[in-house]
Image (cartoon, rainbow, N blue to C red; front, top):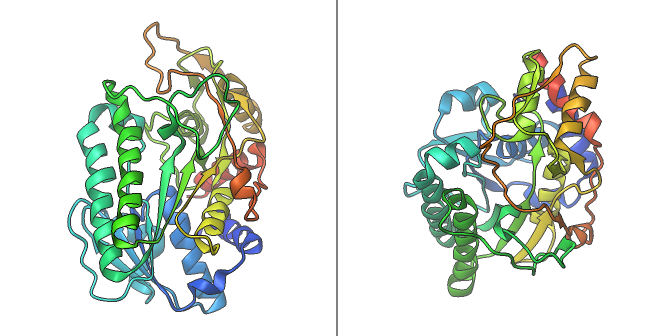
Length: 347
């Protein structure tokens, strides 16, 4: 929620780390999927700019759940947020000018990926087509958050994945619905840029967490462990926890997105990942236990046929290109988790 103490502190942090924000002044900006964590933080920051810097930004918030939007923003008490209540798979109609589109409408929830793969594909492909048609009509600049998963399995000789590297995905696997449709969305954007002159930026993002994340039966490891912590439940691991991850706190992710959106280079793709603190899942669980002052236990509930989301070895993303336009993560893992838990405790 916008007025949450942790969120407000995060907005200040993002502002201090940002530049070229004057480009947003007096602009109309569409955010699709505006109730999601990253999208909501983008929206909150634009609200923050209006409230504190008189930016006069008009925010079009495309959502399916208008009640959640009201809960997050109190938009009915403001004059800078215009709800657009619809599915992104439907044609988007806005009578006014649109300067920027931040296209966040997508579902990365592993539970949904396995239960509703067709819906996942539709939002990433049909939804992106609808957004592109609007961008073409309005001559709007498009930002699209993709995923590190589009790289699939890369060659073992690659130690850090660059934006130009390519891997392999097994399109016969049900779980490939998400990365394959994200790849198609990227290609649609690039095709519209070639054929119609659309201006775009793409970020391939990995493992973002923070306030506003889904902590209810999500299926992603950080979400599930934070969910346990917030409810003061034992932290449950469904494997030995030997897999390695690297997590990016939401303020660092938003700072990266802003660097990408507001820099002068057009039609570019960037990796966005905090690779400074790799951690085993089991160590993550014990770190959260420590932050809760050992009031809960780490419990192993290992299933023989545990269906891991990613079945191949993790390879780090190379963020040199993003660092080249001024980005570096600043929130360490311990601080980020502590802030996330506190956010939910304040709700």
